[in-house]
Image (tube, rainbow, N blue to C red):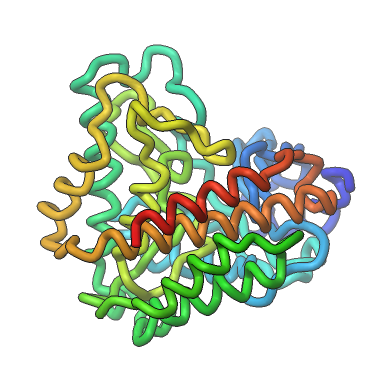
Length: 338
């Protein structure tokens, strides 16, 4: 499916003009941003500047997934807090391009995936600043009063972890290509040992270094947190555990879907990041083994979904290859945490 079919200009352009008050949005170009593995993200470019549009992938969607309204709502709620977010320009339920979407301002800075930009965070001190800004921003998110920002009904925090385990077991059953005994065993163990939840906060659900915009001139500053698709109210330690999964130490291999930079010299290791989060948040991290096991399980299921959508041609032409070995490896590593 072509970009013009994914983003019909004739219907979107008048809405952009109305939302921005700028007639120059009557004509614009679109570019699919590579790297998105669930919802599709596009740059919109005109003489007025740049905006970003997010929409679900093509093809059959799993239940409750890809809700653009939730992404737009949480970013609007967090505007004005200590959590930097992009300004939402418009949200549409499907009238404009035939499916839910929203448009936000493009925030300047670096989105860092597989390598550091040339000249950015070149010293150990700058890399430490970059890392601690990243984890401090997560602690800031978890400190937001959800009721005060109009997000008190954004999720159901009671029984959150038990529901999360059930949800991701269900997602696995809906998307798996074949049985993986290690995944099944990990799901069973997680369901049988859910810890008592310490507190309930807004959780991001997919917090990693390529889902934030780093300030191009200051490694100690984050300009925006992106990709709120999995956000809700729940247990903040699920965010910390995913951070730990994605934060690869120097002696570890990279995740093929999430190439990172944290293995490079000068970045604090995983233990230092945990200590920083604990100091900033006051959280008790004694149950992190369980949460890290869950992070491995969740990401294995996400990887299976990516694989299934890629093979079905629903990822805007992106091909992520055969992920079977990585999915099994994640399950094995998750079991080691329990």
